[in-house]
Image (tube, rainbow, N blue to C red):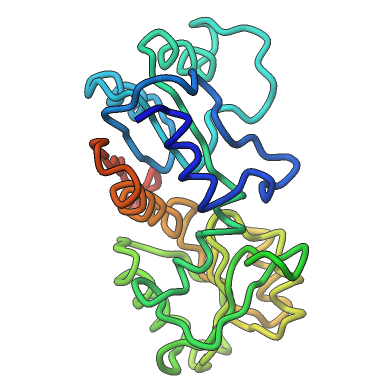
Length: 263
């Protein structure tokens, strides 16, 4: 199977046109006529993942987060990003990223809210630009009413995490929630949207000290499961999807784990 054929399947799921205008998705390294016999799927194209792609002699690497965001003026070993690009090119590995287009359509929010993970009901998109697309994130009803600490334990169990961070005023520690908003990735910029939609409990990643204080001041509760925590589900999902579509290609999922640890 050619690289271009694999790309067609990926873009049937999440068309590039739905990516945010600041994003950089699609075929970032390599040729569309490359013959693909072995393909690796991962959340990020870290140095470790690129090294594993080389060691496993893969023909194509597919990740959620793009290896290239800002412009690159040189491709050599002097910069760690351009060195990864150079390594992929030297070994003939085609590299494809599907980021905010997958977040919007096809997609990360629906997967996180679905029966395999949060198992929400009565769901609705959180962020969308038009009515003809699915939109980012989901809001919905929890399987049962829970306190924020109980939801935190539920999230850890369902997403296979060792920890989450909870931003909540102690005075509402016993408050019971029956609805939650979830936006995998970095979601602090959408707090006003979550509040406007009437959600008091928000699950996301990359939150931070000052946005956390702002949420508490607004009377909201935020669970930060890290950027990795809610998005590592990309790897098994895309692996399964490509196995169904590309039966003659060996698909190798790689999960290098959360880069953040509580010590």
